[in-house]
Image 1: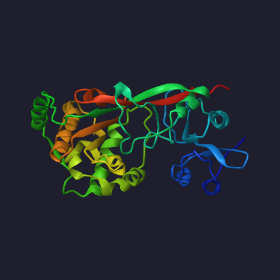
Image 2: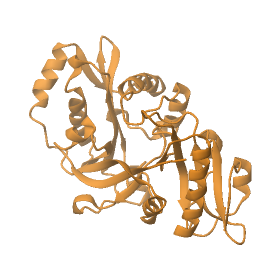
Image 3: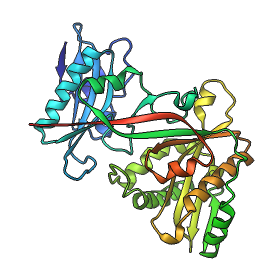
Image 4: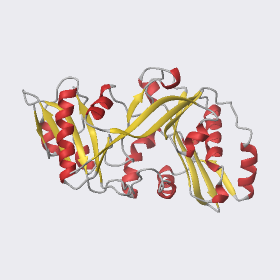
Amino acid sequence: MRVIDRVSAAKRAQIDHAAGLPAFDASQIDSHSADAHLCAVGAAGEVVAHASLWWNATPSLPGHAIGAVGHYASVNRDAAAALLGRALTMLREEGCTLAVGPMDGNTWRRYRFITDASSSGLNEPAFFLEPANPPEWPRHFLEAGFVPMAEYYSAVNDDLSRAEPRLDVTAERLASAGVRIRSAGGCDLNHQLKRIYQVSRVAFTRNFLYTELPEHAFLAQYAPLLARIEPELILLAERDRELVGYAFAIPDFAQAARGCVMDTFVIKTAAIVPDPELRGLGGLLVGRVQQAGLRLGFKRCIHALMHENNISRKISSHYAVPMRRYTLYSRELTR
């Protein structure tokens, strides 16, 4: 087995991959601005493991220069060891002091491994837009010297009629402050996405490993979802016609793909601009979007991919039960 580094997207598209390795869209090497792509190849020249690396424009962390390891896949632990060993060497040579993964460059793209598929005893199938991985991939990272860096959770609410009593008081207070909540129904969704981007870049600035994303990249990322959006599941909180918060939810199309009745939706994001006057708006938006889903005929919702220390997890705990845990890993790079 040998590892080939700095493989171009065109070259990667021409190399066959081993049975058991998931299909990989080589165009992502360029579209995600990867600084390098590596392939471990077997005796017949087939790809048995691959990953991309980023060391430019990566998330910031005080005291460290981060190198990201993403686009990861491997058929076995030997291929993983060879690939990750070379990846860590390259990141060290590029001046990185901390390797973080799996992460496709930044947290706007796919990152994290599922590390507990049945949290709290539940056995929920994958939901729409949820990252997926074989259970052995996290072990590959651990065997390469990575350790858990952060954990995330998804939770499921099986009773959309459940109400949080304090929300009425919050709603009255926010209404008196001029905050109005409406759905995106009847709106130009492309225009609303631009407004949502502006709130996101302010609201997420303090998030763990936040990286600035240009507006055009944000819009390109959400454009494929426009045809699947249910506008009544997008709530806009405005004050003096300015967007100050939103909740973005979408039907669980993974159910439909399995041939099941689509009775679940996914709360993907809730974001609020920092302002003491808006205290409680996040919880109100989550409560309201669940009510909207109930009116549309949904029976359940999933609160997706919440950081362990994020306020969204506290809000979720009023309604939902944890169903899945995810882990992001890191490894210090010493000279």
